[in-house]
Length: 297
Ligand code: G3H
Ligand code: ZN
Image: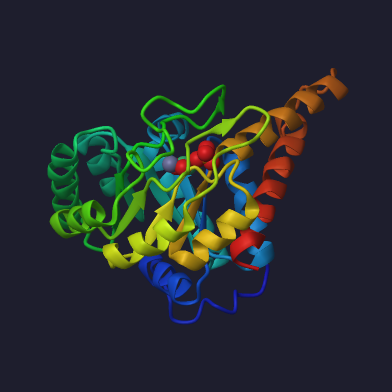
């Protein structure tokens, strides 16, 4: 059993870790998973660096594992290893999905109304906040403002509506109003980030000055989505400018799939899943470790 993380101290909740990371100009890594071996891969990488970590599951990912089952798995690792590992209901598109995750014991939920009009987004996000507070006031609620695309996949072009220009990027005054009117704990703006990764690289650069202005205007920690494909130096600068959580998915999926394809090709007679899947989880673990080192080690 690994030694208790030195930073564990009296901190217990995800809220404690977010506040602590923000105060130290660090960030928490948020990594999406679809399978149990990937959960272990993320945990191993985080524990190696003694970094608190957030496991993310989208609506599709959590329906694949099981909503209550993924909550039980993460809780069991937290308890067995006495380790700050938390679970987020990533990109929920309805009140029902938010409510289901809150009742299942998730530590955090996201209502994603980025595609809605500003007013519709405010109204529905506010209803989510009220609903979640009634279930459990300790659950963190995040809102999304500014459309950045929807899929963690390889992209042929920047998704329509997610163009990186002054018109589409989040503005400080609208962010301040969104936070004030919804009561969210965290907010994720559009600052040049995209969900997914352009084939062959070349995702846009982040608008770091805008992040600093948005953090000031929001008065609450900011979350950076679409971490895959962003230049390392931009991730580091974004955290210094006020990002408290960074999300990654596409790069993990890609590493997992490529390693699995190689494993199957090199071992055509291997039929034990726990053997032919091992290199895939190890590849994912390496990506998680590289990302965490940017803003935690
Ligand atoms: O919520 C998930 C993340 O924003 C993932 O984005 O697939 O571009 O890394 P990514
Ligand atoms: Zn996201």
